[in-house]
Length: 212
Image 1 (cartoon, rainbow, N blue to C red):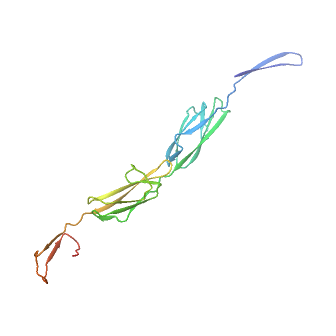
Image 2: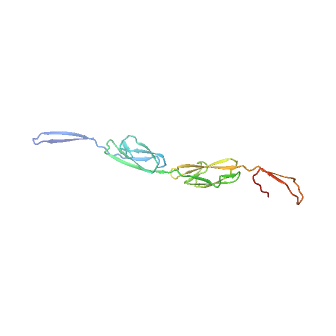
Protein backbone atom coordinates (compact mmCIF):
# COMPACT_ATOMS: atom_id res chain seq x y z
CA UNK A 1 0.00 0.00 0.00
CA UNK A 2 1.32 3.44 -0.96
CA UNK A 3 0.03 6.88 0.17
CA UNK A 4 0.55 9.71 -2.29
CA UNK A 5 0.20 13.41 -1.42
CA UNK A 6 -0.28 16.22 -3.89
CA UNK A 7 0.30 19.91 -3.08
CA UNK A 8 -1.00 22.82 -5.07
CA UNK A 9 -1.61 26.50 -5.02
CA UNK A 10 -3.77 28.89 -6.97
CA UNK A 11 -2.93 32.19 -8.61
CA UNK A 12 -3.33 33.96 -5.30
CA UNK A 13 -0.74 31.79 -3.60
CA UNK A 14 -3.30 29.84 -1.55
CA UNK A 15 -2.06 26.35 -0.92
CA UNK A 16 -3.74 23.04 -0.15
CA UNK A 17 -3.01 19.33 -0.32
CA UNK A 18 -4.74 16.00 -0.80
CA UNK A 19 -3.75 12.39 -0.28
CA UNK A 20 -4.67 9.09 -1.90
CA UNK A 21 -4.03 5.56 -0.77
CA UNK A 22 -3.21 3.11 -3.56
CA UNK A 23 -3.01 -0.66 -3.11
CA UNK A 24 -0.52 -2.31 -5.44
CA UNK A 25 -0.99 -6.02 -6.11
CA UNK A 26 1.69 -8.35 -7.39
CA UNK A 27 0.96 -10.58 -10.34
CA UNK A 28 0.48 -14.13 -9.03
CA UNK A 29 2.62 -17.04 -10.19
CA UNK A 30 -0.16 -19.43 -11.16
CA UNK A 31 0.57 -23.14 -11.66
CA UNK A 32 -2.00 -25.67 -12.82
CA UNK A 33 -1.62 -29.44 -12.59
CA UNK A 34 -3.84 -32.45 -13.23
CA UNK A 35 -4.14 -35.60 -11.14
CA UNK A 36 -3.83 -37.51 -14.43
CA UNK A 37 -3.08 -36.17 -17.89
CA UNK A 38 -4.52 -39.29 -19.55
CA UNK A 39 -8.06 -40.37 -18.66
CA UNK A 40 -10.82 -42.53 -20.11
CA UNK A 41 -13.80 -41.16 -21.98
CA UNK A 42 -16.45 -39.86 -19.59
CA UNK A 43 -14.06 -39.75 -16.64
CA UNK A 44 -13.41 -36.78 -14.37
CA UNK A 45 -10.32 -34.61 -14.76
CA UNK A 46 -9.16 -33.36 -11.36
CA UNK A 47 -7.25 -30.07 -11.51
CA UNK A 48 -5.28 -28.28 -8.80
CA UNK A 49 -4.12 -24.66 -8.98
CA UNK A 50 -1.54 -22.92 -6.79
CA UNK A 51 0.01 -19.48 -6.49
CA UNK A 52 -3.03 -17.19 -6.20
CA UNK A 53 -5.78 -16.22 -3.77
CA UNK A 54 -8.71 -16.44 -6.18
CA UNK A 55 -9.29 -18.51 -9.30
CA UNK A 56 -11.52 -18.49 -12.35
CA UNK A 57 -11.80 -21.80 -14.18
CA UNK A 58 -11.95 -22.30 -17.95
CA UNK A 59 -13.15 -18.85 -18.89
CA UNK A 60 -15.86 -18.58 -16.27
CA UNK A 61 -17.03 -15.19 -15.04
CA UNK A 62 -17.04 -16.10 -11.35
CA UNK A 63 -14.08 -16.20 -8.97
CA UNK A 64 -13.56 -18.62 -6.14
CA UNK A 65 -11.01 -19.32 -3.44
CA UNK A 66 -11.17 -23.03 -4.25
CA UNK A 67 -7.95 -24.27 -5.81
CA UNK A 68 -9.56 -27.61 -6.78
CA UNK A 69 -11.66 -28.08 -9.89
CA UNK A 70 -13.26 -31.16 -11.47
CA UNK A 71 -14.70 -31.55 -14.94
CA UNK A 72 -16.05 -34.56 -16.88
CA UNK A 73 -14.42 -34.95 -20.30
CA UNK A 74 -15.53 -36.92 -23.34
CA UNK A 75 -12.82 -35.52 -25.63
CA UNK A 76 -9.26 -34.34 -25.20
CA UNK A 77 -9.14 -30.72 -24.04
CA UNK A 78 -6.87 -27.90 -22.97
CA UNK A 79 -8.05 -26.67 -19.56
CA UNK A 80 -6.92 -23.44 -17.97
CA UNK A 81 -7.25 -21.34 -14.85
CA UNK A 82 -6.80 -17.65 -14.19
CA UNK A 83 -5.56 -16.49 -10.81
CA UNK A 84 -5.42 -13.15 -9.02
CA UNK A 85 -4.33 -11.79 -5.65
CA UNK A 86 -7.05 -9.43 -4.45
CA UNK A 87 -7.52 -7.50 -7.67
CA UNK A 88 -8.91 -9.10 -10.80
CA UNK A 89 -6.86 -6.64 -12.83
CA UNK A 90 -3.67 -8.52 -11.96
CA UNK A 91 -4.29 -11.91 -13.52
CA UNK A 92 -2.07 -14.72 -14.68
CA UNK A 93 -3.08 -17.85 -16.52
CA UNK A 94 -1.81 -21.42 -16.72
CA UNK A 95 -3.13 -24.39 -18.69
CA UNK A 96 -2.79 -28.15 -19.02
CA UNK A 97 -3.66 -30.60 -21.78
CA UNK A 98 -5.69 -33.65 -20.73
CA UNK A 99 -5.90 -36.45 -23.28
CA UNK A 100 -9.05 -38.56 -23.37
CA UNK A 101 -8.93 -42.17 -24.57
CA UNK A 102 -11.93 -44.07 -25.90
CA UNK A 103 -12.96 -47.44 -24.56
CA UNK A 104 -11.89 -50.14 -27.04
CA UNK A 105 -14.48 -51.94 -29.14
CA UNK A 106 -13.39 -55.44 -28.13
CA UNK A 107 -14.54 -58.39 -30.20
CA UNK A 108 -14.32 -62.06 -29.16
CA UNK A 109 -15.04 -64.81 -31.70
CA UNK A 110 -14.58 -68.58 -31.90
CA UNK A 111 -14.11 -71.07 -34.70
CA UNK A 112 -17.38 -72.69 -33.58
CA UNK A 113 -20.06 -72.12 -30.97
CA UNK A 114 -20.55 -75.85 -30.29
CA UNK A 115 -17.93 -78.51 -29.60
CA UNK A 116 -17.70 -81.97 -28.12
CA UNK A 117 -16.19 -82.71 -24.75
CA UNK A 118 -12.36 -82.82 -24.82
CA UNK A 119 -12.22 -81.10 -28.21
CA UNK A 120 -10.26 -77.86 -28.66
CA UNK A 121 -11.92 -74.49 -29.15
CA UNK A 122 -9.94 -71.61 -30.61
CA UNK A 123 -10.82 -68.04 -29.65
CA UNK A 124 -9.75 -64.83 -31.41
CA UNK A 125 -9.71 -61.27 -30.09
CA UNK A 126 -9.55 -57.89 -31.81
CA UNK A 127 -10.15 -54.19 -31.21
CA UNK A 128 -7.83 -53.39 -28.27
CA UNK A 129 -4.22 -52.50 -27.52
CA UNK A 130 -3.73 -55.32 -25.00
CA UNK A 131 -5.78 -58.30 -23.85
CA UNK A 132 -6.29 -60.33 -20.71
CA UNK A 133 -7.61 -63.87 -21.00
CA UNK A 134 -7.77 -64.36 -17.21
CA UNK A 135 -9.97 -61.45 -16.12
CA UNK A 136 -7.23 -58.84 -15.80
CA UNK A 137 -4.51 -60.78 -13.97
CA UNK A 138 -2.11 -60.79 -16.92
CA UNK A 139 -1.95 -58.54 -20.00
CA UNK A 140 -0.38 -59.02 -23.40
CA UNK A 141 -0.87 -58.67 -27.13
CA UNK A 142 -1.87 -62.31 -27.72
CA UNK A 143 -5.00 -62.34 -29.86
CA UNK A 144 -5.58 -66.10 -30.08
CA UNK A 145 -6.17 -68.62 -27.32
CA UNK A 146 -7.13 -72.32 -27.26
CA UNK A 147 -9.06 -74.18 -24.58
CA UNK A 148 -9.98 -77.81 -23.99
CA UNK A 149 -13.16 -77.97 -21.86
CA UNK A 150 -13.10 -80.58 -19.11
CA UNK A 151 -16.85 -80.85 -18.50
CA UNK A 152 -19.94 -80.84 -20.67
CA UNK A 153 -21.77 -77.57 -20.10
CA UNK A 154 -22.23 -74.09 -21.54
CA UNK A 155 -18.97 -72.20 -21.05
CA UNK A 156 -18.91 -68.40 -21.10
CA UNK A 157 -15.45 -67.26 -22.09
CA UNK A 158 -14.50 -63.75 -20.95
CA UNK A 159 -11.96 -61.43 -22.56
CA UNK A 160 -10.87 -58.02 -21.26
CA UNK A 161 -9.28 -55.54 -23.65
CA UNK A 162 -7.71 -52.21 -22.77
CA UNK A 163 -6.55 -49.12 -24.63
CA UNK A 164 -3.23 -47.34 -24.57
CA UNK A 165 -2.56 -44.60 -22.04
CA UNK A 166 -4.77 -45.02 -18.97
CA UNK A 167 -5.84 -48.51 -20.03
CA UNK A 168 -9.58 -48.01 -20.57
CA UNK A 169 -11.10 -51.48 -20.32
CA UNK A 170 -13.92 -53.22 -22.16
CA UNK A 171 -15.14 -56.77 -21.50
CA UNK A 172 -16.41 -59.18 -24.14
CA UNK A 173 -18.04 -62.55 -23.48
CA UNK A 174 -18.80 -65.52 -25.71
CA UNK A 175 -20.92 -68.58 -24.80
CA UNK A 176 -19.87 -71.98 -26.16
CA UNK A 177 -21.92 -75.14 -25.78
CA UNK A 178 -19.85 -78.24 -24.88
CA UNK A 179 -21.73 -81.45 -25.62
CA UNK A 180 -21.10 -84.69 -23.71
CA UNK A 181 -19.71 -87.71 -25.53
CA UNK A 182 -22.36 -90.31 -26.40
CA UNK A 183 -22.62 -93.32 -24.08
CA UNK A 184 -22.07 -95.99 -26.75
CA UNK A 185 -22.65 -99.66 -26.14
CA UNK A 186 -21.86 -102.38 -28.67
CA UNK A 187 -22.82 -106.03 -28.47
CA UNK A 188 -22.15 -109.00 -30.73
CA UNK A 189 -24.11 -112.23 -31.07
CA UNK A 190 -21.09 -114.26 -29.98
CA UNK A 191 -17.44 -113.64 -29.11
CA UNK A 192 -16.06 -116.39 -31.39
CA UNK A 193 -16.99 -117.17 -35.00
CA UNK A 194 -15.88 -119.36 -37.87
CA UNK A 195 -14.54 -117.78 -41.03
CA UNK A 196 -17.17 -116.66 -43.55
CA UNK A 197 -19.78 -116.55 -40.79
CA UNK A 198 -22.17 -113.64 -40.48
CA UNK A 199 -21.58 -111.61 -37.32
CA UNK A 200 -24.51 -109.71 -35.80
CA UNK A 201 -23.39 -106.45 -34.18
CA UNK A 202 -25.70 -104.11 -32.29
CA UNK A 203 -24.83 -100.53 -31.21
CA UNK A 204 -26.90 -98.17 -29.10
CA UNK A 205 -26.41 -94.72 -27.62
CA UNK A 206 -25.50 -92.78 -30.76
CA UNK A 207 -27.17 -90.92 -33.59
CA UNK A 208 -25.03 -92.18 -36.47
CA UNK A 209 -22.65 -95.14 -36.50
CA UNK A 210 -19.56 -96.21 -38.44
CA UNK A 211 -17.89 -99.59 -37.98
CA UNK A 212 -14.12 -100.08 -38.43
